[in-house]
Amino acid sequence: MGFGMFSIMEFIFPLFFLAFFAIFFVILFRSLKQWNKNNHSPRLTVEATVVGRRGHRSGGGPNTSAHTSYYITFQVESGDWMELQIPAHEYGYIVEGDRGRLTFQGTRFLSFERI
Image (tube, rainbow, N blue to C red; front, side, top):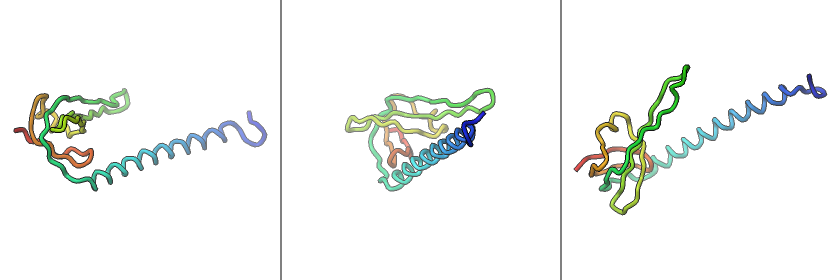
């Protein structure tokens, strides 16, 4: 069933195709922009206290594997809070209430040394 020379599928398929690639390139552009911003940010080491921890699980459906991202919220000397994604192997060693030296670059967690 068509409308003149074009069927609905001839119209819809290219739109979905373009939308998929547009979304892909927007996500890629934002990721590269954040990566570049982090690389050009200074490495800072500040006194900080761990005020929160959380994990965010994604996937894990019948045909997909699960992935968990780990986040720690730090309160720095100025009173500001910052949440940074951290590697899974660091997550178990940092608990709420820990005080120490947080080293980060932009939004990139580098290390946390307890005092």
